[in-house]
Length: 304
Image (tube, rainbow, N blue to C red; front, side, top):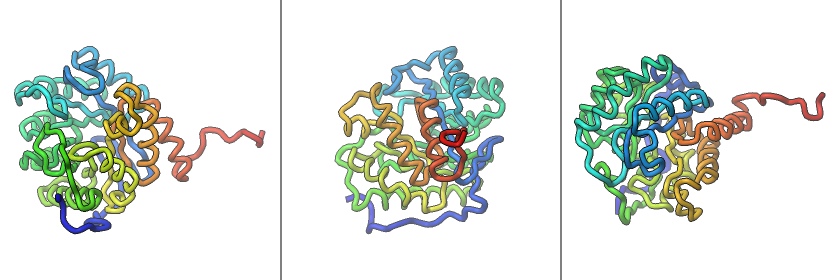
């Protein structure tokens, strides 16, 4: 079995004012931030390479911004198992593109999904504001790239898997406890390495190192991650745990995605990595009103 004795919650962050600061943007407690996905890969599980070409990728960025995205997440390597991608090829797909986005959208928060420290340093130089280390510190030097550049870092959980490895019969005494232990330890390591405390997020990393039942358990108990004090990022958009639950292929998982997003928001998640920005924006705006952190756009019914 993976993991030690079950715990309710791991180390609690010294939140300060609780504001998440990335690039030129600040996101206060109770404010939801939307991260649009733009994959520079020819074999993405969802779009099958729709934003691999430069023109298509820039158009997707422009549309995401127009639709209300606060961040964009650029990936140069498919997350799961697939054709090998060399470091040089990942650099080719990401570095110049990040520089182009920075020139095109000066205030947009740019995240890069990479597990390689060499890529991390180069995209930071090109203008990235956040390193989305989806593979939980597989390259131990990546955290120093974030610290040296003064940019943010996502600390994730993959159950000890190597990059681009698909999970098989993953077992935990308590998956939520294991996620909390791992992500908070990585956050503490980031602090010790010099990463800004207001630029660190934790991500339970649904489906990575987890089966469908484990990803569902993480979703229903997300408040336990939020209780650590670290800002929680959720990346559930069109994931396989939604597809298996509803028996639907990737292109038909939109409604399930919105359900998982709204539950996550209600339970305390703050950043949401999504494919469908307009739908997610509407859902999260409504949740913000329900939670009392925002006001309705109009309240004329029965009052006019």
